[in-house]
Every structure is written in structure tokens, then in C-alpha cells.
Image 1 (cartoon, one colour):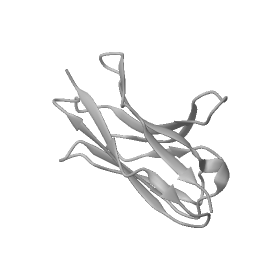
Image 2 (cartoon, one colour):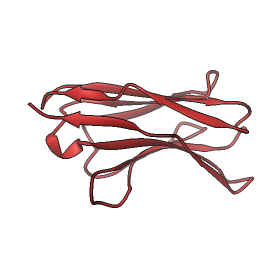
Image 3 (cartoon, one colour):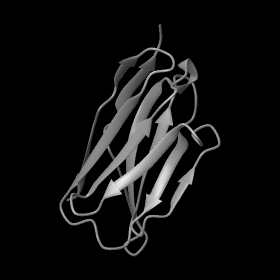
Length: 117
């Protein structure tokens, strides 16, 4: 059973930076998509960024130019570097692993990011 463990959330001032990490335990398959989603209070969960096993990335408009997603396939870990953070980035950030071959999707437990002065 693959599990995702996120870390790196916290409280940061506007304009600051945070780096989120998500480590997957177990075998995740050679072809997969890892990503970050977020959910603010009272809002639906939304895509932030995804990265496929080959390295191609996709970003939400709100994340482009400020956030960078990357992965270390040897460690089964995905990262989200967040710069120039804004109060509207405040949310619980969830890691996601999708295996298109197995048609399986796994979520992490979430990590809180709060941007406030």
C-alpha cells in the first residue's frame, strides 16, 4: 500500500517562501503523475501543479511564475517551491499520486500553509 507523507507547511509572511515535500512509500510504478492541490476554507480543492514521471509540468494560472514543482524519482519524492506567497495562497496543500496504468489515485494527509503578517 503506497502512502504519501507531506512536510514543509507552516506560517509565512506575505512575500515569503516555503518548500513542500511529499515522499511516497512503496512502489509507485514507472509511469505516474505526482502533483499538488490545495483547498482553502469554504472552497473546492484545486490544482496547483503536476509533474509526470518524465518531467513535464503543468501549473495553475495562479501558480505560474511563483511556484516550481520538481521531483526526485530515485526518492519517490515531489517538491513544491513556493515563492512570493500571498494571503490568498493560504490553504491545506495535498500531495497526489496518480498511476494511469493502474487507474489509481492516492492523496496525502495534507499540510497547512498560512500566509499572514
